[in-house]
Amino acid sequence: MNCTEFLSSLDAGVRAHNAHSQSCTSCTRALQSVIELDRLLAIPVTPHVPREFNDAVLQRIHNRRFLTTLLAEPLVPVAMTLLVIVLWQFRAISTLVMSLTHDMLMVALLGIAIVVLAMPLFLLQTSSLDR
Ligand SMILES: [Zn+2]
Image 1 (cartoon, helix red, strand yellow):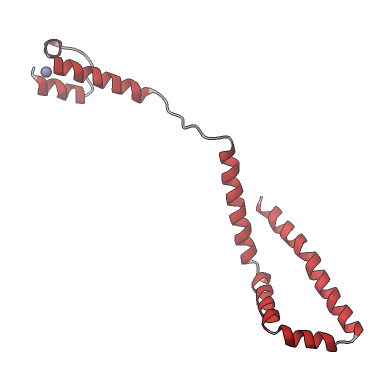
Image 2 (cartoon, helix red, strand yellow):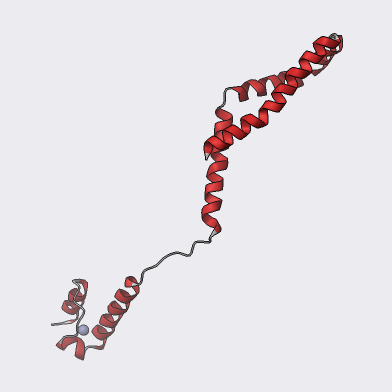
């Protein structure tokens, strides 16, 4: 047997000295390296994951899902459009509000109050549906 044949036997999985490797320092070192490599590969490796990692990942998923759900709600684009219109035509709207009678103003304020009070409940419900 020569060096090439011995190294081929290592590649084939043989892990033992023979007459050649006992007389050849290069093949002895190759056998020791392969045995050491086999030992290292046999050690189970479990990555260290910080305890907070799972919670952080789940929180990020929840946040993304919540935002996606919120943006998918049909009322959100309607509310945003209304907001843009109010900001764009604020002067005309404020003139209109000034011309309203007291009763009409109270009805409008009641409607706004209902929407403002309903929004946290809607957000809470959407948030609890995600979990
Ligand atoms: Zn050799």
